[in-house]
View 1 (cartoon, rainbow, N blue to C red):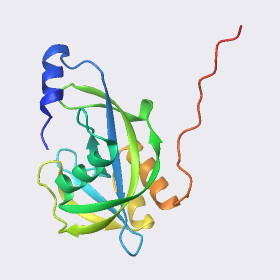
View 2: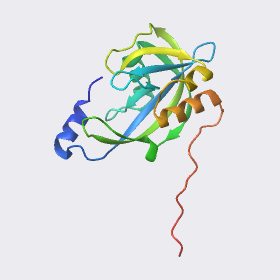
View 3: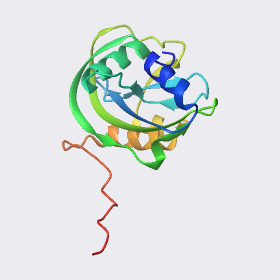
View 4: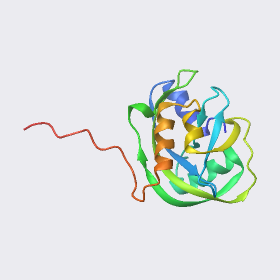
Length: 168
């Protein structure tokens, strides 16, 4: 999907400056426990499914919506995998827009629809094994999420904190 009205209006006020953006990632697994990845139209890199949470939208609704928009698949969210952010989730787009994403990651299974790339954000879709995923070009943060997808831990994941209070 193109830039949302909310973000377009915000960009009109602040230009390309840094925007903190809540987002969702959906790890769609098939019956063979292969992960659905999409090939990004602009870069050709492979990416997980997901995107920004719209104002007043719940993360769960955003996850189901983003998956539908990008893949044509209706999914059931099966668990919260974790929450991620930090320097590796900062993106500078070709037009100069800078975004720092904090993403809530969900695991999901397909309950309807027909897989098809949206043609805008995703030009191709593919279910891949862990071995196949390792050979695909992707952003550093995507590689982290793919690694976590195949780890299949029961407990939610997150990067350990590195911040500590200042010494008194």
